[in-house]
Length: 496
Ligand code: NDP
Image 1: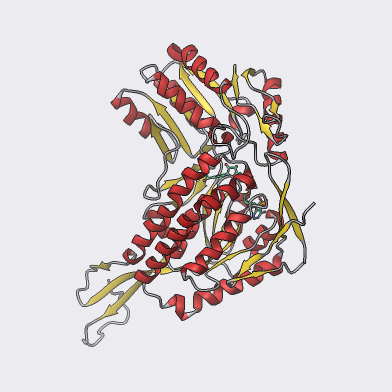
Image 2: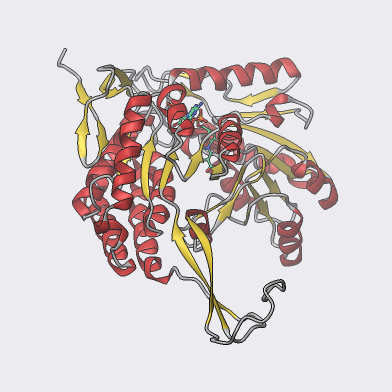
């Protein structure tokens, strides 16, 4: 067996061996074959990376770079990612089992995030505020925060790292990334390309390793000015407490249990496709998965039949094959978790009308699970309340708009929601009444660097994408300059 490639951290513009000398193995979830060994980061590695990011932040080559030049660097980075898009796409497929066709699609848009923030870099500015004292000039300035810690999950590593890195750099910060232990590779290539694009050494650092070690050490590091996190609600809650106690900010993109709602006036063929896309695309391993499907009773049987038919024709297999529609789950525990939830659903009284079993993925032997539809479920069951993060839809009938709004909002999460209707008034009413940060009408999973998104309730805090997210990566300074040379008459009265 050939020696596995060893991946080091990327710190201060260099590949750096882990302080402990330890590495861990990453495997291909479609075949269970080992892929490479990544550096097992610890607190000493994190310390080194934060120090490198702090010196880059203070370095005049970065600190004094004009905002326009910052934009140039982001544009160049976008170009370089575009040039490496096939390499990135294949590396992510091997790491987490996502489909090559999906990753090629993602890679077509990843550079656009950098182009978007490249264009925004020299449009970050404060305002002049007219106070009531005309002799006073009051203005605001938006300043970078310092070192941002970015902690990302395994399901769309490059895209989710980009959602943090592009605006953080655009605003003039430096970054330490801790990718998921299951997907170390793309963040390392991204950091190398950032250096090649002209970002100074230390502007983008990557420490690989486990959440409980490298991740926790990053969260605990007092040199950080902010943490931007995408992952589970449980880890997000821990990060929220840690950052709050140090009075630093956090942007948290967390889990979901999103409703996908089909009305009786919907285009049923499109709605069925939307339901399939919502829960079976990416094997349901997306935070925005439309895992609770509510269908008006008048079209329930028809919709269900279409969804089941399409689910049963989904081609499961090698994610590198362009024909494949469902790849494996990302690792063994993830497959076991999904299987465990389906068994739990059965014991709660749910009926599995299709799927409900692991699959061998056409003989590949990886962590595959069949697309699964559960019926006879209700909002009291754990399979309807908890995030499964796999290809498992819970389908429920409803009778009225009020009824479905109540059911859809009866969840701790508030990330996204889908609505299928041809009634324009209903579309707007539902958009207003649903308690979710993103509402899609007659579409699902649409996303753009231009469109801000926020998770409500236990789905997060803070905004990603669009111009809004720049506020998350800057601090606001208010400057007062008294232009009057008059004598100060009364030191005991406040000026305004
Ligand atoms: P986790 O919260 O377990 O992990 C996310 C990241 O946090 C990983 O890098 C992980 O490292 C790290 N981590 C784990 N424990 C700690 C810790 N104590 N301190 C610091 N970092 C830690 O989530 P999953 O990896 O299981 O990701 C799936 C979850 O992410 C789902 O619940 C999903 O809903 C959510 N998600 C949300 C998205 C959104 O935009 N709202 C998008 C994608 C996913 P390691 O992997 O090495 O343990």
